[in-house]
Image (cartoon, rainbow, N blue to C red):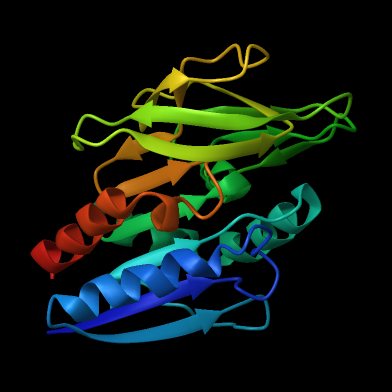
Amino acid sequence: MEIKILHLYSDFMNLYGEYGNVRLLTKALEDKGCTVLTEHKTITDTEIDFENYDFIYCGAGTESKRTFALSHLKRFKDSLKSAFENNKVMLFTGNSWEMFGKSIETAEGKTIDGLNLFCFTVKEQSSRRLTGDIKAKAEFLDNELIGFINKCSEVSGVDSPLFTLTMKPESFAFETEGIHCKNFFGTQIVGPVLVKNPAFCNYIAELIIENN
């Protein structure tokens, strides 16, 4: 079985070594007998057909680079929405998943339209960042997850969180994290999340194969 992976903006959305997620997932798929082809797309690409891929990934970047990526990704909104509706497996880590909401209010007070795939909104602040180690649970996994969060944003209006936090710094007011809808997974956990959590990596690999 051939699996096609799309790695978006790997040249500048790779703040925490997030390429490691793709590398480990590739190995997991190959160990299951798959042939894996990875393609990289960035802001210089004028054509992207998301339906051509079995797995779509984007990692974390600075807030300005995330907004830069968003401006490019908007050109392919219809193709991305179609891939989502057709259950393509997607993982967006760090602040990259914030692009899929209704809007982002920057720390400077500017409001930027998101991809509007989901109804949540994002508000940034510049006074301090929320950083720390966490542990989390997901309904589809037996194993507890570990990871690190470093963000300056507050996300409101997520209907289907990805994780429930079981350990977090006192400064974290939120009890749930990320988003999970159909085969879309978005999480602020970096480090990279699949490398730190092999069970989650294996779950994604099996989901890709099942969906192929």
